Length: 471
Image 1 (cartoon, rainbow, N blue to C red):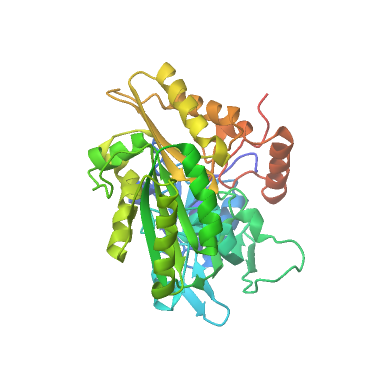
Image 2: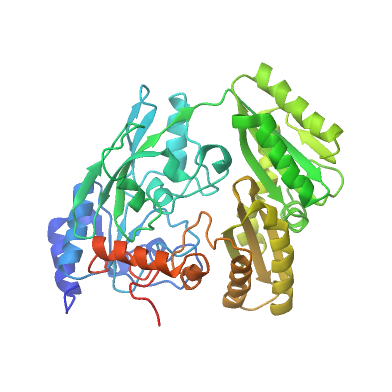
């Protein structure tokens, strides 16, 4: 980085190089670009650059690099870890104006999209073309595909389709020096050298700015069936998961588990109607995507009934329509209202060995109760792919003790050999705990890669890890 970064010269050069609509400074910077959804304090960026083509994105990056000014890529600003949070004096490069679907190729089953395109727009376009985009998040209407790929988003159907990186065939991105690298491959089989796109998927904008992507679409499911099941023990949950994998095979598209504390908040505090009459030790939402309703619908129902007769399921509601499927998912999606109904809280996205999850919940609940006054913690998640979510808060506290809550949770994750981030990234909020999950050798290699691709350290600096290891 230059010894004396020159913000004024950088702004002047940006103003000359870009259309006026693509550069916002001072009071023209929208509030949304000053703060993401991670509860971090708002920061005053030097400017917000909003290009509508990859060449201008590259030019803006080149200008910032030449003047030693830090750059933070921004998408839909729905992240929960602070990965897109503004940095004082940095230039935000927002992809919001670079939105749209460039091509749908039915023969290759691919879709080429711009990074600023909302996920829901992509889902609808695939559906209209007779295909299916399996990536799905609660923030689907606001989150952008560039941010989804930058954090390697997971979502509800990882158990069948994998993480976001599994749907990417090609990628275009801008490097820290302003180079535009276009690798919009549309072939599933392409082993010609390094698979460079994987460096940028999940890198949270610290290695490059994703501008376009080629996504692999899936065949549209012919039918969707679901069941909301009540179980008595976690051992039965694990047994049901194994039975679902064997009995439903590739049709199994979701296996969501909710602990009783979550169920109470969803059905009592939020007010979602429970499809089950009696309380249970665990609640499991199973979804199956088949080819034909007349074949796969009865097959799913008979499989559920067989598990009930075997005593594995205590009670179950089985969908008879897509309305039922949506109603079942409403219990799991109630967490989207926790922010307004429970107030400020700490939300966690962790990964654990499936067999240890209930033991973790017991240990974490106890540790939080011992260290946090009047604590409430609730547990739920995509257990089929090893991803547990939890929400914790100190009821009645004027200010939430987020540092203390985070330390308790992540120390328990470390004790159980889990990961501090299953699908939301590291950003700023989880950075102090990254060494709970990654070895010193892994962190050193990450720093080497960062130094090779961004020697000035200007791309999203301070996110994920520090360039120099703290002593």
